[in-house]
Amino acid sequence: MEKYSKKEIKEQYRNRVVIGGIYCITCNGSSRKWIKSTKDLAGQSNKFEFFTSTNLCPEPGMISDWNQYGAQSFSFDILEKLEKGETQTEKEFEDDIRTMYDMLLEQEKEKYTR
Picture 1: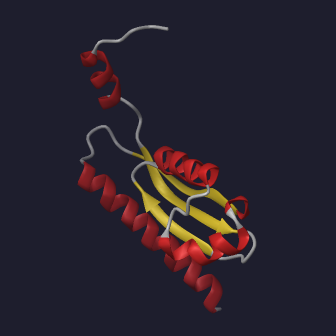
Picture 2: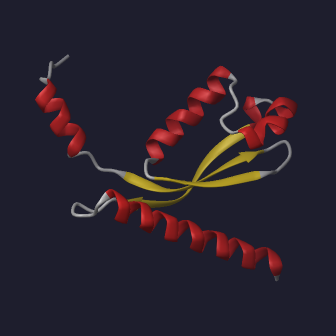
Picture 3: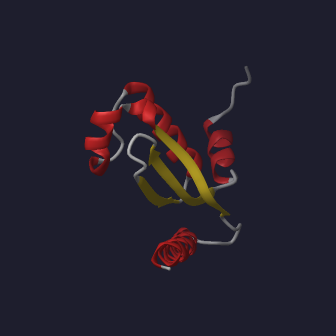
């Protein structure tokens, strides 16, 4: 295994590709869905896997379904991805994800109100 200096590790972190977007956690037992946005899809996916592997509920709003159907009943699905631009600030990236989230919710609303 290669050893890296702290400087090299920091540089690799700064130069990583950041992918944010919209994801959905679904309870297959109740068919309830929670649609969320994040600036780090990989991190949220890892967090979800940790919660399900340790049987800890990731969100207070899911606790009743979590207790009734169990961790194995929940799934994590990526709905939309957005790669952070090289010159894009954190705020601009966050705003773009929020816009994408709002547009997706509006589409879903139209789908169910027709």
